[in-house]
Structures are given as structure tokens and as C-alpha cells.
Length: 258
Image: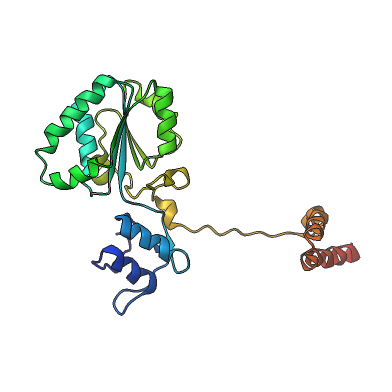
């Protein structure tokens, strides 16, 4: 249905190399999409310098939960751990205005962590993670927009108003019943998203990522008469005489015929 005719089961840095340069079995591609660990991300950035385009730097994964005293600490802890179990280099961050919530989340994380099958991975990830207490929501948003998280879960009483002030984030999850795992599997948004602060400059993968845009222009004699002199002046100031001449010869031709 999607028009896909070839599928190759491959992963890791070796898959990036195969797609970037081509092998006997894997054809060279124009653009590589998708998230990965720190090695895959580094490989994508390396091959994009000359050989192939990429969607964005995507990985290792991260989540920020922005919460106030209305948040459910059980939900918040579960959201942090769902990110922490991705890999040892993942990061989970809680930014909250509530000291009580911070304390409750710490206790709940310990309780839920003990029940996870990927406990050892999550423990190492949590060592890179943060629980940050701020004085008010203004400070929370300033820090959030500076961090530019890949996934941002807003578990506050007025989450829609807070969301209006988010400038830098990969994908935003609104309210208590919008966990990041829903975005991974079922809610419909793409979960290949910019990480490591790249949400300040990149968007997540979307239909636009697969589209190239070509511009077309046609200038008629009246149009050349209108903009030609400005082109001549700018080209002359850059000392690009051939650029200027490409317009001048046309202007002379137009004037001779009029």
C-alpha cells in the first residue's frame, strides 16, 4: 500500500554504512531516516558530511516531564522509567514546581524500578537523569526551552496554557493520560525526533521529510525591465561582472526591440 518494494533486515552502524555506500545486497540510498544509539547517530552524522542526507541527529533518547503539584507521582515515575529502560545512555528529566511531588516521584521510581525486567539498564540511565525543582512555571519553561527535549510530557493542571509557551521540543504529550510510549506505538505521531538539544533547529520526521521542493521561475520582458537594474547594481557591488552582464545583454535586447 505504501509503495515499498524492498526491505532489508539490518541495524546498527553497519546498516548506516551499507545504506550510505551500498553493498552487493543493499543499494546506496539518498537519505537515511530513523533513530539509534550514540554510535548510530554518530555514523549518520559522519556519512551526511558528503555521501548521503539524513533526517536529523536522533538518539540517544530522552524525555522531560514538566509537572506541578497536581501531577500523579505514579504516572510521572512510570514516564521517567519508560524512557530510562531504552538504554544506558538515555536521559529522563523531571522539572517541577512541587518539592512534595519531587520526593514522591523519587520514592515511586525506586518502587517501580524493582519490578522492571530491564532494571540494570534503567539504573544506569537514571544515573544520567535529573530531578529539578524550580521556583515557578516561568523558570520551568525557560529551562525546558533551553533543554529542548526530544519528548516533553506536560502533567500540570493547566497543561494547554503551558503548551502554548513551549518553543523547543520534539514532540509534546499533553495531560496525565498521554504517556510517551503512546507516541512510540499507537497515537499516530512519528517518534523519530531530534535529541540532544537539536529540537532548537530540527523538527521530527514527517511527510515533509520525504519531500523535495523545486522552485520554478519565468521572467518576461516587462519583469526583466522592472528588476534588472537592481540585479545589475547588486552584481556590480559584488564585483561579479558576468552576473551583471547576463542581465545587461537582455536589457539591451529589450530596449532595442521596444
